[in-house]
Length: 603
Image (cartoon, rainbow, N blue to C red; front, side):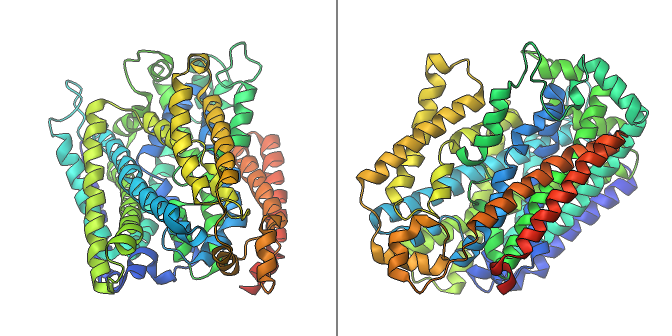
């Protein structure tokens, strides 16, 4: 794919803008660690929320969605849509609690909630684990996805697959530009760049989806060709075909996803009870109300607005290239269906849009990489360096350490990128690995907010048990043929039993420490009874039931909006009216119940 002057101008303009943002906020970010990692706790909800959405829109996301649509149709997206209820619980139950905790990282909560040697060990170990392993993996696979986009577009050569440029140059350039503005400007640079990057990414994907569908011949012709290549009309069904002779997702697996995945598995951006960069953005908000609004905005944009442009391009690829379906279903495919998206850019994008689409993917990759850099550095500096190495570090020392840690995370991510490229790993492999590493720990992350008896040993047991049980279950012959979702559920249940047993055979946290946590965070629910009696002056919001109801209504809003938008696109008027009408009703009830919350009216 050849770029022209207009394309190069668009690309150069974007890169200059990204670097300018870093220079613009350099001085403010350099004042102290709270500015560097939490924007001085002054972000309005719309900036924080957009930053959350931009981070989850990575270069790999459209490619992964294309692969799933090619394999399973629209219903393949339930592998991530199933997290919706957990996300809505974060909005209406956990966002206020996180903001009250006033932590810089989710790992910092460990010593706020627990005390003693086990808490110190858990905080230090988890900070290093998440910063070094998890953030490096995320940066690695996002960068690999961007390299694949380039190799299918501007570096494409039909004779040998690329232009001869090394993957090292591709990775190095992307990481270097991202590193400059991220290191210089800290969280301020990350969130402001995210605003620009998200707008560019959504505009690029939407325009390209319109062009791709038009090239096929419109939505009606798109449906005809996809149905022919898919061998059925199942591709456009929001739900899997449970009545098929051999359904790819039996109803039992679907129910396991919808009802269990949101609490059973820890996954970046969809952590049970909130975590990672979601907590970092909530901690950066002005107050509780802004934290709740930011997280709600994120959930609605994440599920309701972003998916359909990607899905339409995936359908266009299926309609134009029947072999994509074969790649998705064959055991030894000749190609990777995830590459169909950038391949279609090479074929269909006109001059100008080519540059915009490359900027789209670069912006998506850079928004995720910059967030993981800043987040990983926050763990190393706040939860390791400041906590264990240099507790008396002044602001200047902390900022220097923060910049050094950011570069370290970036270098580690680059190293993982090389490994993933040369190992030939797919994006879905990384997705499954992260789900596996987090299987089983979700329940303890949720219940630690509502039950005083949980202690540091509970989390340690869950962390060790989830990995040990995952290894055992995946290697145990009777479970070899079970779907991945069932194996994950077995791991989660075994881990739940283990950490509950450990909880009851170990001592609870000290009463004074629990009372201090209770006074600061004011958690709801009956699980704090013994502690609440010693802090009788504390008045929790008493809104736990209201929050769960809002989460249910919010999830219904998402799951009705998704098919409603699809029905509008494909001209199914009755379905569109029914689904979107239901979404309006459930969404209206959600906002009504939410607006009557005393906690929201006080803030």
